[in-house]
Image (cartoon, rainbow, N blue to C red; front, side):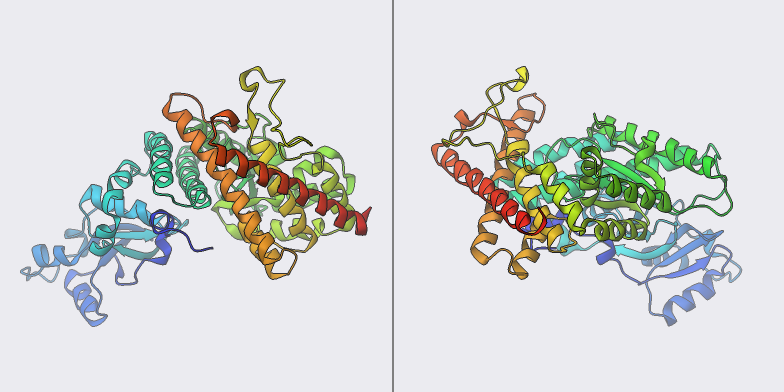
Length: 488
């Protein structure tokens, strides 16, 4: 991941990178005196207690001093002194969430568990980190909520606007801000899916739930989201050896219905094109996914290529990432076929940056709501992203993020240093204009849109935007020439 500003790094640091092994894990029936001896011998400071292999309690150093030190009865169990139930965090959560939970509950320690509810570490409150956060703590507090509180999902989505505005005012890179918004949307996804799991598991549709992965596609898959992306998601699951395949799919269908509804309520709206895990096309076992992709690339219809294109930009947001990685490698092997590359480019070559031959902005004419406005996503960021993506596929660059693709293409000498710098700056500037416009719209009580009014831009911004849009069209023209030379 590229180096990012400190203001953004505070929000995208992962708990798994900061957790400690400074604990022992004992059964609820263990003797308190023997456990403390073990604690001292192993030079640990926290006792975690399990019951039926699930986290059931915690005893901290303060608890030992306050409750245990003067107890002489050796028959006492750890269960007599533990704090239960335990407040915890998941290893795939972000560090700011752990800090917020500790502040909210006045805690110094938080156990960390994985997707299987197994303890994998402990997070300790770091006073230096809290001091470093400074004014950001108020925003962290507003984005900290109970594990299964759906209202918290709405709050974290609303807070994105204020966070984006503050970072824009601090002159933080717009690409960093977009990356952060994507991270926060991933938090909303994970919370929504966990809430959905809790509800659907009560229905007992199947006894043994197979490993699965929830995918996000499009801008979320590239970690390039703006303020109001819609839902582009799917599910991959392992075939079950013990359960009826129809019931397995029914489980994941019900799970998808539940979490997509939560996402919509939170402010990540349903996809108008039904590109969601509620649609059987985007919810399959891994072998079924591979068969579907194989069918798409063999047929090479315009619609199928759109589907394949979407799947080039995806990542696992929840569950077992190995399933997503296996599917991604399978798709990548198919995409480097010259015939497929040719058709992929033909599908995208008509999408041009929004500038006429005479250097004027191409403004919306048909849509009454946006008439006279420039579609800065459809006629700006997307043509740039597509050009970089086609070069990436052609040169076997298996990266999911546009900036990472540009960096790798530069390493391969496809883009020289000047081109790399120019393309990155174009992407950053277009992202900045979109984010600034979306923040202003939301604060004015209007929806966040991808359309801007060029008349409201500063003269310098207009001039720079025209330069970048012209260069994007030149990049697409160059891509066509190079691909035509080999493939047409």
